[in-house]
Image (cartoon, rainbow, N blue to C red; front, side, top):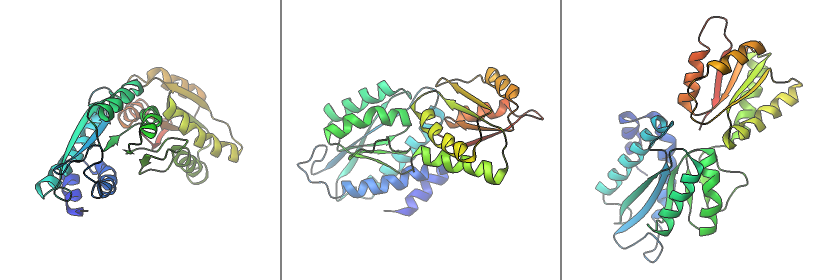
Length: 267
């Protein structure tokens, strides 16, 4: 794996893309052993698929990742490809919607005959795709935590969200000294995975949440939720949501005497 290519792509696009690029290097090591008779592999080409949000509320986050991956593939191709085979990467937009993720995966596997899928993002999206790709026997590499239960053909570069949120919440309780925690979360599978870890730490400490507030995917106005959290007298907010939504929520709590918002895990 050419680590210099990763460093260049990181400087040009986004340092957050490094996690994907490292995972990509591991995935391409699989492609290097591909045989010409396998799906998506010819003597001249390896066809890969990608499913993530090119549009919708999280495209601000996911588009840079896609650009970084594309830049790396181009560099690999310019240097001769993988054992002489050039990479063809076909990307499908799921707009951060699970149903569209599944439809896109089916299209890539059944019509485009990809060797594997790379670039999946979002807990709910990976959860929707995982049973299908596992039955199809086509590997899928995601940038976010792998689904539970684990699947034979689904891979991830992150620890499970319940574990991440457990560690983060325990740290806030024990090291930061949080006394009254509000949990603000995306109301879907992603948020529920976070809840498992948050509640495990809270239960161990023998404390209850000051507020338990879910919002729908794509929400941008957090004023109503801010009022609920204010009324709860929380001193700390744990946010389980996509980055720009957590930033929007953080802006809501930027006024003096407002609780501090923590975003230890995002998707």
